[in-house]
Amino acid sequence: MKIVVDFDKCKSNAVCMGAAPEVFEVRDDNFLYILQEAPGEDQRPAVEEAVRTCPTGAISVEG
Image (cartoon, rainbow, N blue to C red; front, side):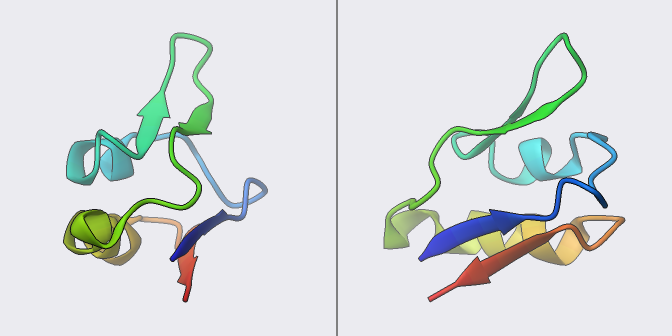
């Protein structure tokens, strides 16, 4: 699985970080960082929650 973020849509509201903190992080500079671009399958439920709850629809998963 590969994480894809449309940074033009992303508002760095940290909802994804709440769902999958091992994968996403919003830092003090108020930008989203992907900590794991290709997380393991054990992270899939949390990543799918982040995709589902992203208010701007900026996150998607390939594979």
